[in-house]
Image (cartoon, rainbow, N blue to C red; front, side, top):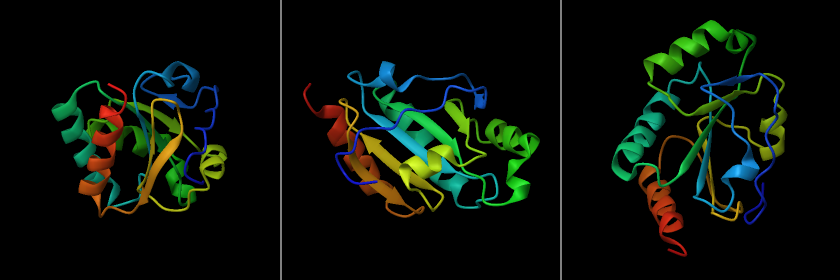
Length: 148
């Protein structure tokens, strides 16, 4: 996915956990962070801990959407996914992308991966892997402070 690309629409089927969100409702309000993770990813939990810190620090100044991207057949089992969500205290909207529809839209290949969209819904930063979380936070702050 190239920078300045508009955020793709998300499926409206029943594969959501913690509620469902409509992208059209998010645009224009706050920056949006879309993060890809997998229940079998040992690094994803550590990366999500940063996101929890940002939510505590910045409150409701950005939207957060999780995309569970399975990496194996075992990752398709919902019970371990729901347990990981509970254990990790993941309260945001999470889409179970078992057919890799959203993954393909984003052209994503790695977990964890993060996509930052501005208030207009345009991709402004993307990052893969668990390193560089401070840079990701700086980019998010920049987007939160734009056009205040």
